[in-house]
Image (cartoon, rainbow, N blue to C red):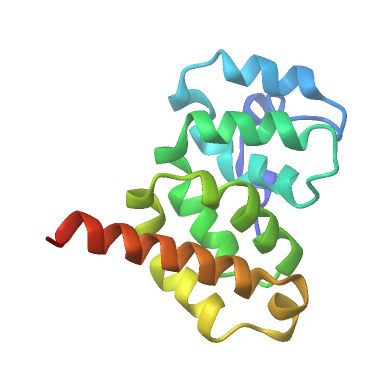
Amino acid sequence: MFSADTLSASQRALLPKDKHDNEAIAKLDNMDPAVFAPLLPELLTWLQDTNWPVARPVLQLMLKHLPLITDPVRDVLRGDDEPWIFNLLEHLIRKMPREQQSQLIPELERISMYPTPGEMEEEADVAAREIVGQVHDFGNRAGGP
């Protein structure tokens, strides 16, 4: 889905080299968000397996810069990597503010109402349904009496 081939050599040099390269994430954490914003789609790939040592620091970096990740996350939700979709739902999207989650409602509703067999196997549909319910509850409270 994503390719580091579209990045310059200097941008690729900023990315983790392997699943143990927490130092690369620490360096990104101190950079201007404009510098690493183009790296976000590639950084999200480190959340494909949340057991990788680099996954937790990547997740923390993403949580600090939530407004920048909506579009790259949407692209993953539209893809077919069900374990990755589940990981993003469970570890990242659940922690987004409701307003930001609401920007992903079309993708979340598709997963919750029309899941693929793989999404059902990973229980991504269950996670998406819970998030959609929370977003709708928030909307009802915010706009209701």
